[in-house]
Length: 300
Ligand SMILES: *Cc1c(COP(=O)(O)O)cnc(C)c1O
Image 1 (cartoon, rainbow, N blue to C red):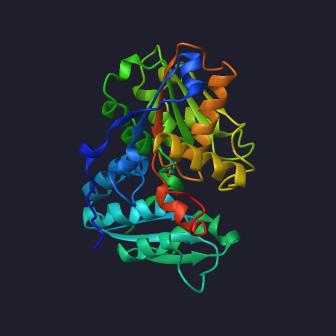
Image 2 (cartoon, helix red, strand yellow):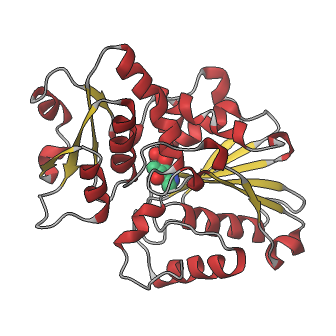
């Protein structure tokens, strides 16, 4: 039986040890939000918190959202609704498959009603929403201010968070990054590693979740570590994931966190993150998505 509760006490920071860190005198700690739950992604839990609170306060008994067939957001949403005691609906991009993948099976087992929608109708959000009444809607990926407000609580789980000069996270919608910017100190730089190729609207997406004074803080989005595009995972990335596992016992996911850690390494080696820095990487979870790989691709 899967459990539908999460345990915030399971979060901890892991210090990495490697020659490329030692050489540059860089401290790299990883905030293990992936430890929250075996299926629900760490950051999704934080991002969904205020949406669910809002749904419950507004008296909703049912909530719905959008996502792809392997989406961490869809799975997390189904669990979070189950835990909150409300019905969940997922609008899934693409035709109904002959058999459900692990992510969708999990969502369905958590009680989510799945609606498959072909790619062109999927983008017509208003037309879809009209087909349902009395339902609380959350945007794809949990993008929005309540999501950023929840993500702003992430840093309070990093002991001694003031010591970090750089905080680095993966970027999908930019909601988590916005939350980190909100809660970071003015001496800290927030770097977001985009999981997509050439998505240059991300910076403005992040900004629109911030108040004017927060927009003045120090942050940047990097676009060089997508490995070919969203969810693309060439052999070089898989090899890096296995190396990191063997050297650090740190599991990463193919869509977000492996690319983030790879990016951090390059930014340290090319001195964008200067020698002597203290870096906190947010491990935002997502490990459930690795189940889409053929067995034995990963060593963990
Ligand atoms: C969804 C997700 C992200 C992206 O978060 P955004 O707030 O959409 O930028 C990053 N990492 C993991 C593991 C995720 O599941």
